[in-house]
Length: 197
Image (cartoon, rainbow, N blue to C red; front, side, top):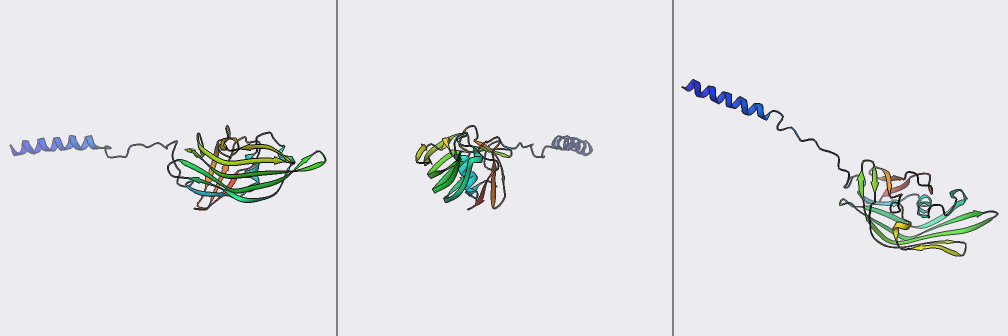
């Protein structure tokens, strides 16, 4: 009788253990297409004002070869938070160019100051800002003596906010962030940032 009970227990134990094989292996996980990448989270200040200012100009408004960068003042910073929010702050950011127009050189001044916010999504190596949430950023472009553009809506001028150039390939490290826009005619290289926090 004891032998039969032991045999039954042994058979039950074998069935239970065979049913558990692989049962504790972790379930396969997929890479999320949205959400924050720990590398991009932080506050980033632009390191190449010329390229950033060129990117803010309306596509086709100037031949990039006719613009000569003179200087810039102020700063612009992008803040990517862990919850998928993007905030941009421009602090009295001013850029000056000379524009070659036939035989003349005319001054071009770009001004940007204020805040704008958007959602952002990570999809592999790309970051995208699909929806502007708010914009209180004064932007103006003065060419010669004429104001050719004035706006407060960041989706008209702010890099990563303007359709269809609201997606960029990003690479980042502990100290640097690079945003490379595909087929963006205003610039021929990525926007470069350094980490503030």
